[in-house]
Image (cartoon, rainbow, N blue to C red; front, side, top):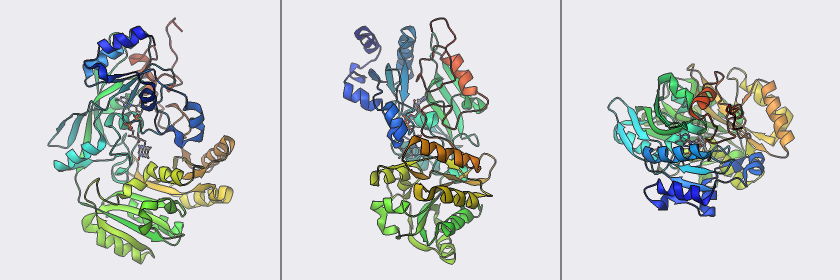
Length: 453
Ligand SMILES: Cc1cc2nc3c(=O)[nH]c(=O)nc-3n(C[C@H](O)[C@H](O)[C@H](O)COP(=O)(O)OP(=O)(O)OC[C@H]3O[C@@H](n4cnc5c(N)ncnc54)[C@H](O)[C@@H]3O)c2cc1C
């Protein structure tokens, strides 16, 4: 980018203070949590944009895209930058488009749809929804910080997924408004099935500006921790609760020991050498759950009210990909995989993995509902990293025994595991970003068709 480009872009933004050239800040705004992966860390550490623009409305986005399209400058859109795979790390310099100042909640409708701008933090949306008698169907453990546009652009599910599936399931995302990188940019509404054109496309085929998200009626929740002597016993009890419609739950997480030893702030609720299960359960069912846990041989180490995202301790802070964060904090040799075990065959799959890799792999299960209404043991196992070859051997072995892997050590949509077989994300990129300027390099099957390349 030239000084003239920076001056021209600054002219198009109402407040020049929102056009950032300070290299340290631009670099910070160019990075996310890619360093969870030792492989991505090596690939992405030195990648940075040249400029960051903090937009406050769709008009400013249109101005930035118009200029960048005409001058072939790449644009990488960013929410809070909590993605794990370098999704928001620009590979080709250019502009980082920071969305978090576009943070208006337009409406929580009486039939339970949140209408909001893409920069709204999910935590703020959850609070607003609950004030109206609703709550998010699912949210990542980064809920307080993550933006709704970033969740749709790069996330998949989280707390709530055990009951409501992932983001792409059950019509949770009702509609998405995007700005395209065409000449001139257009503002397009994707509704119903058409949301999948832009969902989980890593900002490669449009800038999400506004979102319609279906909610679910708010529940009075409680939290519960149960310790079991063995992972097998913990898995069996968590499975029984997860798959049964009799329990109203928002979170069912199962940890093999020694994973809980990484949870220093909640050591009080862990037991040495024991597996743990974390629950968010409907408050009226807390007593019955505790009784059932004891009957199954467990020790209830916490059974308490949940009073919102400020509850202390907040169990969800130790689940989903926060588990990996606590482990890496304790031992930098840890990394992770994202797996799906076969609900009919999970125990045999655990045994096969243990026989081959021992404690190089530690089981962390997140129970989740799939689009076909079955509840399955999703997993974000911890892995002790030695070499890339060994990691790939583990991935190959998982797949050979029927354990699916969404590889978190690759930096493109297609390799990451949520790419759509029907290619709608790619087809949309050809339409909306024909020059390939949006987050270039992240949709690797895209090839620029015009003569300029
Ligand atoms: C500790 C930890 C725990 C996590 N737990 C979970 C979890 O439980 N579930 C889960 O799904 N993920 C999880 N993640 C990943 C991440 O936090 C979530 O996906 C989160 O929703 C991303 O939001 P963000 O605003 O930080 O997005 P960013 O990281 O800023 O962006 C993510 C992707 O979306 C694109 N994007 C951002 N804004 C837009 C927009 N307006 N239009 C189009 N594209 C856009 C970006 O270019 C990027 O490719 C976790 C990450 C960490 C570090």
